[in-house]
Image (tube, rainbow over all chains, first blue to last red; front, side, top):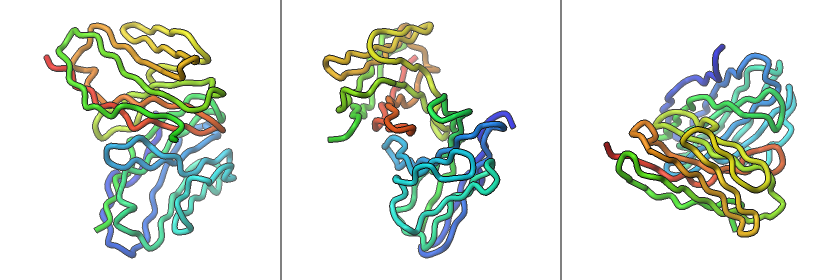
Length: 113
Length: 109
């Protein structure tokens, strides 16, 4: 596709439920990143993939958060037992290689009620 | 201490004014400095990129790095209403981006 695509654009879920957020990177990009942006804040790093493997998951806040990229393209961010504090915009970015320009998707706005 | 700090604003200026946006960073070892622009309900997009110190100009935009004071700046000349957005400074230690909080800028026609 022309850019990074994230689905859904908006997700409202009840506290305690499980959610999956999807990211389709730019074709051919080997690096994929997940960030979380709370209201009035800059994006905060969660995890990045080089190919299929998670090269750095140091930003995941706790073990309720998990991400996969099984074929080195599409990635899914999974959040178990959602809490109201998980409400934020989840941004995905991809780049041709690590340390080259990262292109961001429009984000998924997650609201936990 | 945060790795990068940014005045969150908001900042409102009249059309045509010169805008100055600023960040400070903590680690003198950082070499790459970026400015991103984020429109409402959109993802950030890379605006300017500088390596080490000095100035870089691209049209109406100038990015400046002062390594002695660990200060980075973005200047916008002849500001336009279309420049209204949130501007984020960023550094990239260890293959990932660390962003400032962002400064929300409004250009008043």
